[in-house]
Image (cartoon, rainbow, N blue to C red; front, side, top):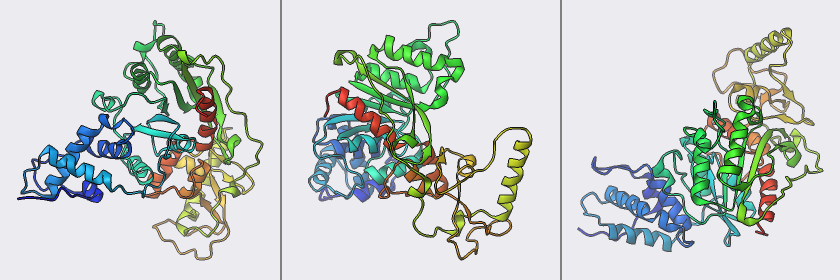
Length: 422
């Protein structure tokens, strides 16, 4: 039985196994999409074999009675390349100025910033499945998964200029040691450092929570800097805490940035970007039309928040909900209920107070509501064209975990200028 080596992108992504012996690969979709986006730039060799295997499996799903060979699958893959789709929401620049990789990518905040400066992303990793869905919806690529696995690291190409990573903060086992490379084993920073050691990019750009400065009494940051400077030999200026509100978005979000340059670049000084002289407030990102009643708090929920705040005030601390005025600056958007409760707003435009979800009590008449996921996206500097394909709960988590794109872009520009990219 013959087939015409034809298969669509949709079939490659959505086809379910028709036979038990046809097993999907953990890397199939990621390798396939990375190959499709890098087939003409020399990076494709790192993805081609797994991409062909993935297409072969898809063809076996589609043609269960045909013996599909690797040449058949390769031909089908090439046919797809000859008729590519251009419906990626945020495509890479046609003639990129540099290449970068995006580790702990989340929903692509680093990628948004780096692409806007002329960069081409050649590898992405992110373990959260819902974040992967959002990343694919906007960039047309499925991120690879767990970067701590050696089989994942094997897909990272050579020759990229910048490594980007918003890695989680973890303590190191450095008691009685000098706090070097080996002391970071078992942490996610170790995997970042290991990739830097192997691939030797010209520069790196790391982002973390402000608390990294004092984490484990300062030993965590000291170890990180020691590894980057002494073990890996990069020039690393003192890290700096940057606030998103200074770069065009009305969010009080402080994050520590760590940048580094390979020694042979001869970089011996670096200036982080200065704050913009730009007034910002929540009304800059507020929804222009009436939002769903589902975002408005119930009277019972409001009662609970008021009582909770009163209890903490009685203890002399400032925990509790907060309502951001239109001319104010939002608190940091973070995961969990507190991130939303400390960023409530007034919006008196609602006329129909009929609940659309199950609530206790009734919808409050004070105009108090949560910010919408789109407002959180704007607070992080994502354009309105950015697609949010997931439910609200996942969207809040994803934007809360993301980087503030404008602050990343401003710092990345400084890095690239030192690299003579522009």
